[in-house]
Amino acid sequence: MPNKSALPITATQLMTPKLSWRKTSRRLHLYLGLSVGVLLTIISLSGSVLVYYPQIDSLLNPINDTTTNTKIPDWDKAYSKLRKNFPSKLGPWRLENTGVNSIVPARYYNPIETKEHGFAPLMVWLSSDNDEVIRKDYWGEYLVTWIYNLHFSLLTGAIGTLVVGYIGIATLLLIISGFFAWFPKPGQWIKSLKFKRRSSKIGLLYDWHKLIGLALCIPLLVLTATGVMLAIPKQTDPVLIALVSNINSPSKTQMQANKQSNIPLSKAILIAQKALPSARLAWIETPSNLNAIYRFRFQTDNDPSYRFPHSYIEVNASTGELESLFNIDKQSTASKIKNWLHPLHDGSIGGNILKVIWVLSGFGSAALFFIGLYRWLVRTNIK
Image (cartoon, rainbow, N blue to C red):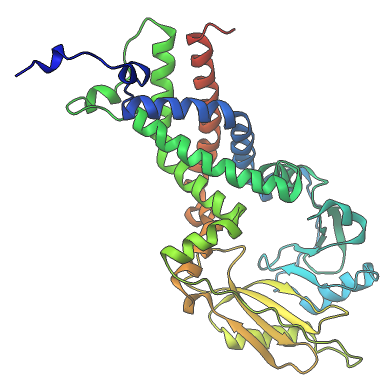
């Protein structure tokens, strides 16, 4: 019987060198890092800043509110002040409930002044006694919202948001391929986790890249996966539906406005609170000149999202009738998964501990790119 090692090597075998899965993973990791690394670094660093963007904005734009109101906001007074100060804004206002003895932020979507900018609502802050407009600005024209647009769309609108979403998909492959490129052989786990004493620059850079990547692997996977689903829901929702269940969406009732005066906002709030008595009011959307509907956003006990919860109640502004109730606690599993995306992505679900981890993950992602790029330049003698 002929010796296999003595058999002649065919031309096909010479032309198709065998690649191990580790080598394939290394090449994929390298090419993905070089192709999306710069944009990913921009997204990562801006994301680290946005973890604390409300606090940063407060520091950069201090508001001298000397009022000493210790009651819950007077919503009727706040709404009246907005209508009086901005009489040409006939569409709905969105008021945020930030708690007792606090400034009341409000938004007016699609103002004519910024209609060419896509998403650029008018942002207004009322004093805690709702008696004075103490700040006014447009989204994207002050620093933290400019950074937000950079993070979410690379300052290029809807197309940029798509690009960010697909960069996220590439990043998932980048993280996974990096893990498999490192994955040790049997019996070498302890050795592969150590920071080795090396004399070569390439070896030291590899160890730093390896250890930072392993430490941040899970946080970066969570941030990337949630970011992809937030950026491109039209592309990712069908996958979620196929794997889990249908996604339920709250209704958006249209009720033609008439000459009849609307019920007071405070009364509409009471009607809504009776429908979800244990829930916390988070946002108020007022009627417009085209739609006689109050729309409220509530956080239920099981809702992880404090600032942007996903239970909605609509009240007829003319009659005071309850038009619709969407309780996220009673919706499908896929709907609840989507409800977790935002509080996971911004770290709010885990308080300051998770937020700090997220901040470090963003800076760590940038460090991984620069270390990996420098190591590649050293290896290829490109300086």
